[in-house]
Image 1 (cartoon, rainbow, N blue to C red):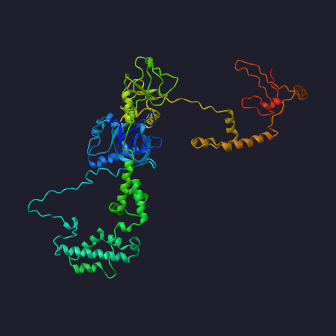
Image 2 (image 1 turned 60 degrees about the horizontal axis):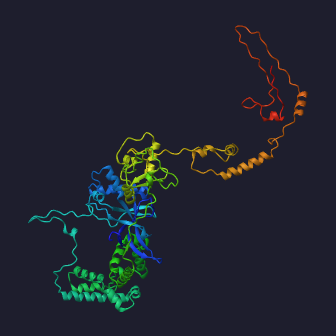
Image 3 (image 1 turned 180 degrees about the vertical axis):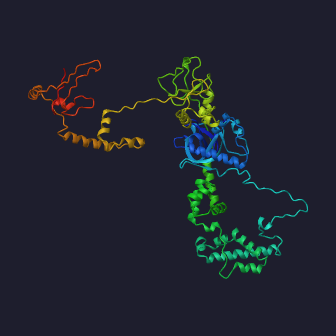
Length: 594
């Protein structure tokens, strides 16, 4: 019963997808909607797989810097498997809020700020335990150190000197170590000091009556007297007594110089009503994150001024009223909610009815037939071949699966128990792969969270890329020849990612096609009839060329008869007659043969 009861402040798992890992959130509010459902307002935590590789490198660099500054080893002699699993326990806090249905809660977990004094193995030894040290802003994609970090180390701890022995003098200069502002052994009595403080308050009230800005802020005498009784006036009065060696006449003369009475005001009086309203809005949004309050709401105020105003503001009646309103709102909201254990089957669950494996990765209508019917495909994480339940994992074309234990680990921690081949290369130095394309393909798979296909053995293999054939049409080839001015192939090949302006090519092709259609020389002519060709041959008979004959001898090889053909028109490259010869556009030539 207690395990299924979730309260405000609990760290819980949320399931938004049947195949993706759980979301880790912290419950801030539990609200009941108009339909009767319960929604949880939660703070978002992000895993390493949810942020970019650049930010991951920045986080690793920050961890190394902390390790160097603290002079302690954060990862003491961890194995590759432990380093791999430790990355699954690291989270990144965010200031982002979202509302999720309470029925999507799948269990509780524990998230804590990274304690540099503890060993990281303590997080691996405990189930459902995570840690964080950085704050992730999903809107601007940045990482910042958490303001609430525990400041442990030589940068924050004081160096305590050795204790002085009896009779040894302290050689340190006391004026640099501390400043004396009050002497309890003064010649004045307590009654005389109280009387001087009353005079200082009266001077402060009179000074506010003379000041125009103070008269607007404190229009009544009671408000002016209350403002003059604040600590800033008393501190000024006591400091004046000390500086004048507790001489009352000299101190009183300083309270009222020639220019008029001294007016001492603190941050509560310096701030205007609009600035106070902005501060309350910022405090409602960011809490006590004074850096963000100053950056987004009050950039003209100093950080010291904002912090001093906050602690003075907590002593006012307005703070008490707001606290009562929040308490009343909290009473009206839900304190806890009961969510029963989720028992519905997961869609990624592989059916094993009738001893036959069902659809893998949601591929409806197709069944996974293992190459070895005795063992089947092994688990992608622990390489086990037997499990009471199997779950499809990864892209459908990979046809990978996980056993029940590794599937629960994947849902909770967002990774596999055992490091893949690409991660082993990152953790332990090894010789480079022979083919750089295979190495880049494997690293890209690991970065995108894609599984490396396993055939049943611990040695994983990379899935080959699917080949494709790019076929160019005849119209494309013709456009390359006609539109050479617009389509510059050499320049386009040097910039493959710049798109080609096909609209300009189409326009140029239309213009060139119109020119070709209107030209009489290049227009398609009709074939002349056979009677015209015979008449032309009768008028222009062909002449028989002269043939040089020689008597063949033993020394002289037989020479072939060379026929000279009148070069009326230019032949084609292959020595054949072109299209104009057959259409009668030029003078006909005859080939004479014996």
